Length: 216
Image (cartoon, rainbow, N blue to C red; front, side, top):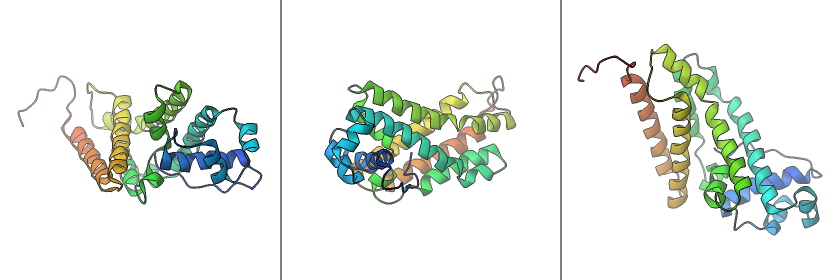
């Protein structure tokens, strides 16, 4: 998921400032390379304030994943593709929206929870689980439009709305890895274009179960 709109908490809101610092610093440096000192410096708080709110850096990681899910959910809920009438148009609009916000440096548009998952899936299961909740929770928001688009077109396939929704996230997370590997966004944009082509073919060529293939 992308960079959500930044909040500007009051100077006394140390916890929120630490969470926003985690969002930005971890995407730039990675979880393991980010120290408590780095987070405190970026947030403008003392180490005492850090440990007042978070017992450990792992606890901060869990909270950062939840904060990411909360803020990105609000970001996507207000996106313009929701106003489209056709559910398939909304799905395509979602993909177009994802492409439009791939902008700037990779640390600005790549996904916090994807970044942490790649690093900590074996070493910090609590963070991994919080990241999974964010990724799969976001994917689930696409399922109603996918299901409605399938129903409107009489599609009864051997794949499910949930599996396709999760595939969109697999493509996007892979696109972010390519952006990090190259230091730019071009390969990521190409990947999103391929995702849209795949969805177009899937909804134009899939036939209901039991319908014979006509050879074309």
